[in-house]
Image 1 (cartoon, helix red, strand yellow):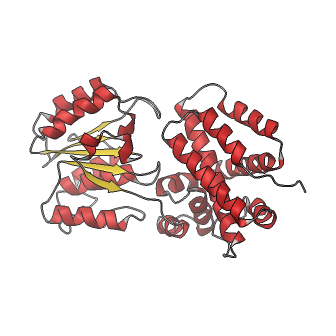
Image 2 (tube, helix red, strand yellow; image 1 turned 45 degrees about the horizontal axis):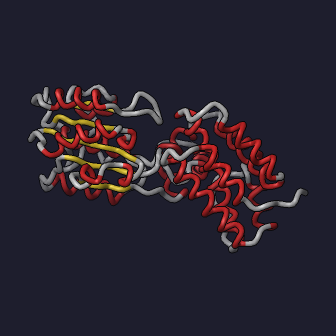
Image 3 (cartoon, one colour; image 1 turned 180 degrees about the vertical axis):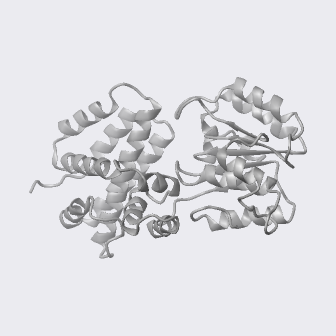
Length: 336
């Protein structure tokens, strides 16, 4: 069995070689955008570390007890730690509890594993507490950290980890992976295009019946904003960010920005004469109108502004300020 991943073959190859050559690191930091496959890669590594019947060195069988329980999140030697909610805070008390667990010998496997998800959400005390474990690691412990970017993690922690930075895939790679999992090719193409190159998000979209309606509304909103006055744009931002900075609101904001970015990029490709990308008809009329009515420079500027806003919101920038700045940089489309 190969590692059950869509894309990121270079990362899988690197980790498999390290395990086959008995060069396991005490800590790994896997970085990348939300939904790109960080958690999946960490769990595949955990399975390969404790697999009882690996078909090849550095591989996992997918059928033995450790492989099955790790996939289900119930393996006794795998400890998962994360903030209580998306956009929350990972606290020092959680890390200290983990340290007490890691001080014990493995219950049944070769390694005791700790998966610390979204470690960019750790508060300074929690990060400093983990640093002690990294400085004095137990011989049979492997730490698996995930974060959006290395810059969001203490440099002293990054320097003690094997850093693996995952990047978004092409829509074609994502669609191929979905089709290989039995997803209808048309639905796979649409989900791949919506997901912005992130397999995890594409998998969720491919089984989400509401994805198309959400996509249609986000496209409709963008058209109204491009054709509207500045006051209309600011009213949209006020409505969208009303109620504060909850993790759910930030997640919805990221979905909006990712969809807009995919539309702008497709419009950019068409403005330079490229063939239409896969992904179905949703938003195709808006893309055609943008490519027809705006010049390549305006479209490239919109791509850059949307990408910058997406990165800022991913790093917990103030939602309202980030979106208001984007509204000022958006071009104007004539109605009709």
